[in-house]
Length: 339
Image (cartoon, helix red, strand yellow):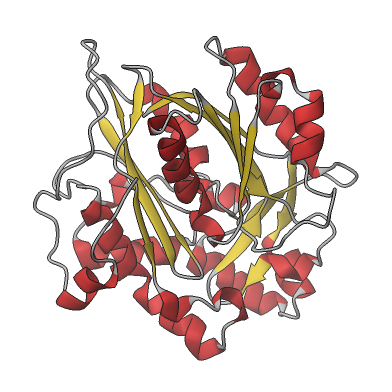
């Protein structure tokens, strides 16, 4: 499957970590410790008075300026917060009515139950639509805002700060270009309560984070001994430092440059990083994108740029020289069935 176009929008407003943590009932001292330990200084935020549809207008405008192929005829809208819109409140209908890029949309889907892993479920759905010829090109929109929500809701104690950012992808089956390889999807039901879980349940999820990441990367054939980059969700700096110590992954392979500036943005993090990484991705080179939703929803995929002699899309093979998985980890998502 070809990634024909990718666009992103990071709103210009910023909210400091201390302001968010104090709004959630924390002290200035807690905020200072949190910033130092987790590497989160501020988050990106939709400016006051702007709407969610306006954020996607930026994304769609950028995609339209770049895209020269067939108009997409299927749309998948992804948001990480498992919250259904009231009738008529989703931005999708207004966008389809106003955006020329969406004039050919005949099928519309919403992915909203996989927390920060939702865009990987959308990639899998897009591949199914393309392979079954239900669509000729699929447009995926992803991202959440905290418009109208209490400021303190952006704080997940002991874990992260939530920011606002948005992305859009156009996917098709044309040869060559940037390729989306095997999409590894996995659910871990014992973490299904997500942010609604008890302190003990949340702690259990945080402790399991590294193992879930390791499993997901191994399932897409991640080469632990190469220098190819890993573009992860921006949960926090400490989690990735621990992961590198546990697995031996070279820290310079991780792309965490957006973390202190914009925080952890539902669903969008790896794709914001991919937008920055693609210009440096040479022919035949690969990077990996990954996100672990707090409800235990894990998604990962390799992204590669085809050599000049474009070859057809192939699924990834098994991992090379990856750290061994326990029998319990293997069983958690076995068998793996991908569309």
